[in-house]
Image (cartoon, rainbow over the protein chains, first blue to last red):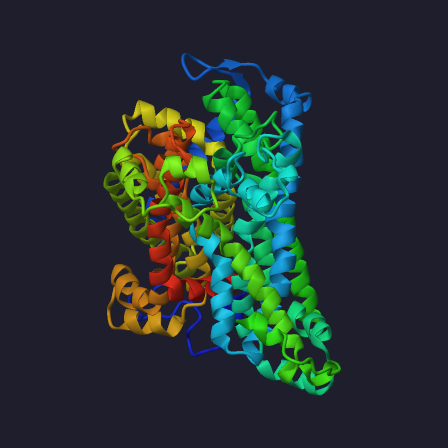
Length: 324
Length: 292
């Protein structure tokens, strides 16, 4: 990003770095005046994000119930975290959330997008593909809490899933799906897959519109079957989008809160607890602000590390493509 | 309908041209179609039970057709949570955030993308990271300071917070869009004697209007669907948003199954309405975002 000034085609005296006399008030000449435009954003940023983040960092080193003054206790909160089973469970569940919100939707989304785009849109009408896409995308539109509440009812002992099992004569399988520690997490994962699947489908289909259709036609004439076209054209062409989907969904999975709140409140017996719900609960129900802050800081750190790794991997892939 | 078509006499074709005419494409269509229908099943369950009386539900279960067209559940939910107030709160909060966040993003991005102030890469990186932060890392100080400042349980507090959170993403996106803004246009405007302020509103803004409208829609919908911060900040009937109202009523365990479904149905109608209105903008925006 530092390059564009020099890489731009050498238009006569267009480079902002060469001072030309007699040109009044050229934008970009002195960047100092632009700081003024950054001011509102910067002040708000410090007030709402920077300041609170640093304060949470400080609070993580204290014991505090939210009233009176925090007591400084050094790294005690972090030391306690290491031996806290709930903390470890919550991060283990984060892995489950990544499977349900990133791995499965991305893989299924790739295949679905390719099928909708390459098979259904071309051999039936594009409108058929668009209608199917809308069905997959619909859950993405709702407030996720509303989705959580509908699913919470479906999975209740007297809910629709058990009703369905009864109706087909499988009432032996009836179950308190979210109330049993063994089935609660798989059910939450299933709900998250349902919520998430439309996002990659829509992004990947949009990406495929960009691909030159002649590539597919040429490959087909050369006798390439669906699978070969998928591997040789679809996957490489939409790799940038795959990175974006992977990164945004991974971060969303690590931060997931609303669905857990609506479905299980982390229960039963912490079977579906996740770091963000654990932090919320510790802040506002156990009134242990220092400990909640420590959980939040660990989560923040992990998210930043994952994001940096993702972006670096993406840059490396882009550079490799550039060389080839 | 598609199912009957697949039972037509099977013509066995080998790979190659099955793609255009064969039976294979019908099988693919049926499989994908069934999957798409399965996605809609929860909505069907919800609709079926939103119009059922609690007695009907407990005797006939969740799968039966409603014995009568029962709308008391819908009306109960509407009145119990004072839905128009919740709708208005959600509209005011999401609308203000969308506009304010776009203005703040535009100003910052003008300095970063066109002004090219020093250290801009670091600043943009900072905004990007801010957008990824878990809200838990901010919530307690925000809650505490909002109480001290007398902003606790006000819509204003939520508006300010989300303006900044959304603007962090908007700044990142607009800065990269403005980074490639044609310099010749700026030069020409400056030659005509336009100052920076005029150039921003008369030259830059009209040229990036499509991106701005995508951002407005995104910010509106993202804020509409937010949960944690409104849950913590807004505690009474006069200030809560639609998702928070639904969740807190459900949390009280006061709701029977039909009312739960009626509440969910009412709560998701605005979202579906936006989806229908903004569909085109959204489809365009998703690609814009992916291009970085």
